[in-house]
Image 1 (cartoon, one colour):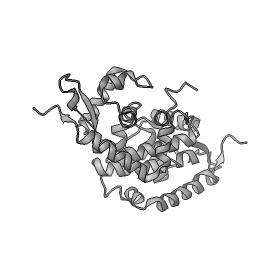
Image 2: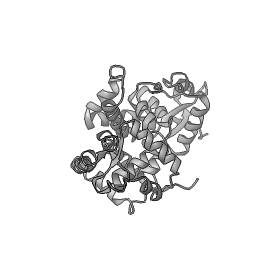
Image 3: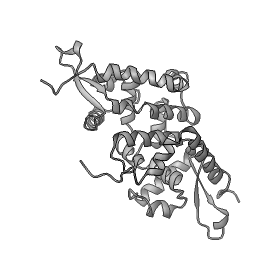
Image 4: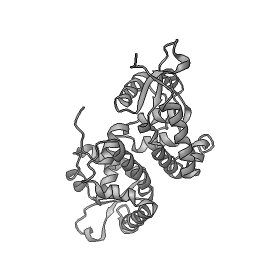
Length: 148
Length: 148
């Protein structure tokens, strides 16, 4: 591991997700349930490049924020499924604050992104509901590709 | 203005603060009350370079997140003071979530950064107290350098 610039909590977070793409990949997994490399690539609204996507997914794996595996229904096709971990799912409150701030100050298309804004309006209960749903769908159901 | 990659709230936020330095500059202004270019440069724990600091401060000014002016006591020295705006102060909840997430998952020095962690533990009341303090200190007290 390379040394950290500091052990300040803000800096350490920035070192992991402080770039133009990482939070967008996590957004696509969290809010759009995209689980495969090709989905994340082709459906990317911002047009992520495949080398950047590959690089960021590898970094997220190293950081313990995504796992790569085969979902039960895909086991014969050998298609890899990316899953969130508790560590990345726990970024949900940060996403919610980001969404609220953007909706207040930036040129957000509020009609198109209504579900995200609704999540924020739902408060802690809505957030916990989504968190539990993501934990069920991502953390327990996918077999680890590194296992035999 | 360049076109946006999308009008998704997460993307729009990332376009503004999604890089390795911008949130650190705002952190230094918000949590350490650094208001001058030289302070932000010399005291930077992560060792920001002067060209990056200059570039990001100019961007933050364009985005309406900092203003540049002379504080009353510095008026004869012509020393420029950077101030936060309501737009940047309203990133406080996002900082708090970032701090909480980092403290849970990353190698944060919890002793050194106790005040930040304490702010998080203080909940909405502590946050609102800091928000009001920053609004008083930054938004109303600094003369605008662009005024005659």
